[in-house]
Length: 382
Image 1: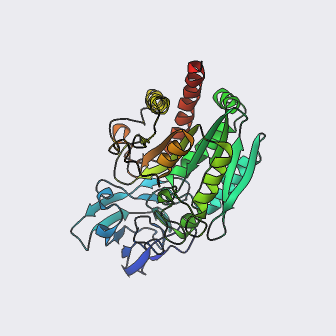
Image 2 (image 1 turned 120 degrees about the horizontal axis):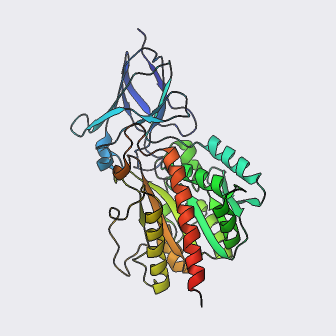
Image 3 (image 1 turned 180 degrees about the vertical axis):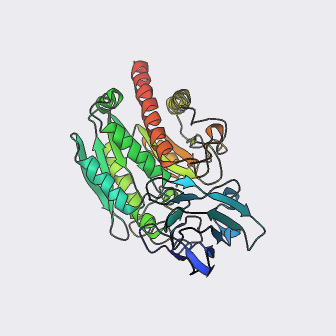
């Protein structure tokens, strides 16, 4: 039989072919441009009908998060709509760390990815659809280094200024699936919580802060290898126009509540990371963050509060990270939401793992918790 064919020459694609023999292939991941970061992959296999595919991705000991491969299962789709998990194992000793994926497609084509992709084409569809809704205003905050728009959707007319933004790290595609769920809820005229939220707050939503990295198939950086979530202290037009654009927009509105949506490669759980290490955290900010975590914990079993990142000691926060900078600069209750590339172990799904659908559902839970949080904040006002 002929060799299978593999390529990634499409929006958000990333893989390099070393060798193919029949239905078996040896592959490597292309690093982000001008950067050492690599972990994201997304590619197509053709000529697969009736064959057991064996795909080896080598050299992963030098990936950004090598600890993230243990217990991980690759995403696979044959229609690019439903994404399931393939039989996958990782051997740290084989060829510099090798992930082996096995799958027998029903048809001729199969797509494999680190997580279900959210391409720039889908992003543009999301923006176009959301912007057509009554009460939604679209604006372009600025342009990326490749000239792509930094899209922002403004919803609601309440007094609280709420910023929701995602995909500073483009390979964390679950973050934009979260955004799709959030926008679906906030633009639903029949949803009573959404109606109340639109009265309580003015939402400023940036579904993708790193369009260049998304289109190029990067894990963590923009077009020139800049990690945007290390640019918030001094963003520049030369290195990080994306951050400069959103921070300037935040300066214009102020920020009361902010959530920066991400994905974590290693921890099999959904969790929050806060701003505890900033030098001037107020009692109100700290209490607000703890209250939000408590409310979200009560709303969904897909969230937990026992596993996450170590808490930074007071006065030691890195102000180049957005959550810390936003909390210090605006006195906001700000946080980073992390969702897994693997699964939420407390609520495991062996077929899908953590998925686009669960990411969207998490957005609805987050907004439900925000609704309760805003009501509590209003009740506590003198």
